[in-house]
Amino acid sequence: MFARKDLLETTICLSNIATLKNGYAFQSGKYNALGKWKILTITNVSGERYINDEDYNCIINLPNDIQDHQVLKEGDILISLTGNVGRVSLCKDGDYLLNQRVGLLQLAKNVNQEFLYQILSSQRFENSMIACGQGAAQMNIGKGDVESYVLPYSSNVNNILLVAKVLIQYMYLIIRIE
Image 1 (cartoon, helix red, strand yellow):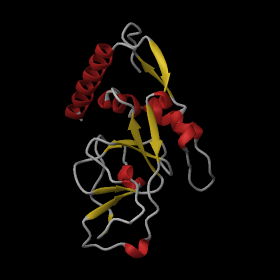
Image 2: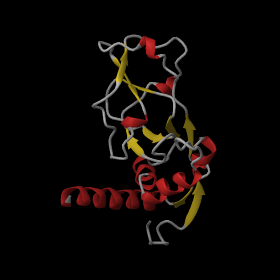
Image 3: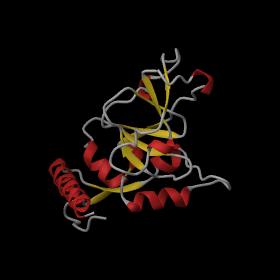
Image 4: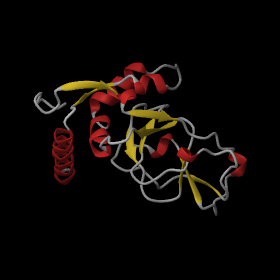
């Protein structure tokens, strides 16, 4: 992915810098088109930089037993765990909720979100997750599959920032060309 071995001089297991959190099992009987809260499913995690927020179900009130991480924040890194496994998108600003079979990466302190997004949005990560996928009708991956992914890394924060900056500029250049 990134050939400069002097910048990313080592590798690290994703579980050392992030934890995969699962979504909530919403009851379809509670869906209401007038609801404030938008439920993000695997369909919304398209592999584009930001979630596809054109199609979703809504609920009016948050379930009593919803966990804090299931109420999403802008910039959260989301991963599809079923179907087109390994797709990664960022959450937009809004009233979004994490549905089951969509994973949220909770980053350890001092982990650069943009760097991690750029690494995980690569074809290398998606192919690795596809290789882990199980299931006849629909592929599925789990917490262990995602967290055991080994990625290029650096103990030097300046190197991480530089790589993140280069990769985001490269991404925007590709978007402009398309």
